[in-house]
Length: 74
Image (cartoon, rainbow, N blue to C red; front, side, top):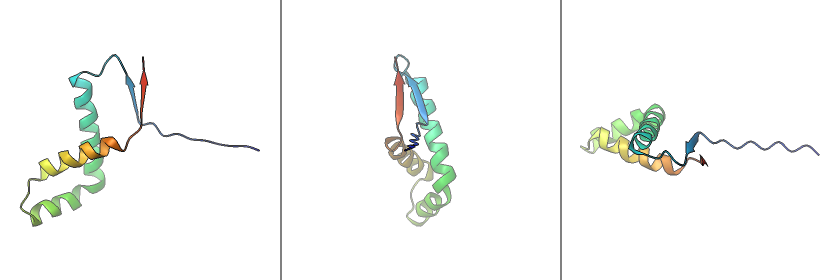
């Protein structure tokens, strides 16, 4: 019996380096991912509801980070 297990871990972090710069980089990556996937829908929603696109994008990027798996090294 052959079992093939693949675990997708897009973020590998050094536990000793979780400074502001690293957190900003993670946030920027998440914002880029959300913008690529949902940018036009978020922009339309923002325009229809008189909301600020950048603020909605940031909120969705934060939510997006909760959906990722992280691997920490020490």
